[in-house]
Image (spheres, rainbow, N blue to C red):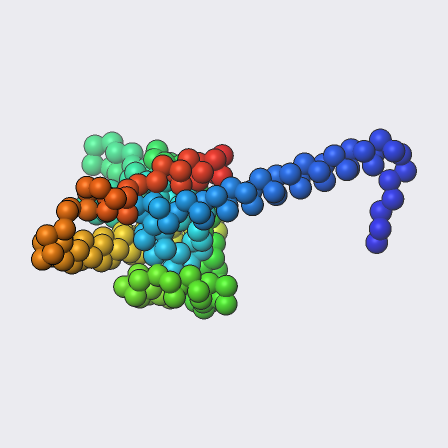
Length: 238
């Protein structure tokens, strides 16, 4: 059904609103394209590829989380990462009585919001969609195995909590914590081990052929960090 605007002022206001939507859509497309071009030069590019094997995590979400959190391997255990994100339960103690409440929300709010929003995908059965398959195939094999195990277990856990009558916001928060505990840090660790093995192989080859270290000359450019990806991701999430 086509709606007609009786007054020209209404048409002008409507056209201005449509133009603002079009401009914002074009801005988002430009930023996303710039992020795609900047990520390959980033020192965490391999982790970005691996995180996209996780359900609900696409390129922008993976870059956004890593920009806010940094190298996931700097956390000694998943609990430290969850505390940094403010996903640990609050606690109030009086004498021998300890009461636990909701999450503290004391950590990085942007990364927490991205991860919690991504968890809504676990409402659906643990299948890999046609659009997701190329991204899973591009990820390292250990990351794919970890992501698939998390996909199956967390989908089952989501349905179990839903049958118990839990609120959906409580469910997705709990699943986000489990997703970090089971998947995120393990994937980063797998990428780190793979990167360390590659660096060791290159070091052996350089020593054999008496090549200069990778940190000198043009060879050092392959390991540099890209500040552009961080800036673009921050702009995209603003």
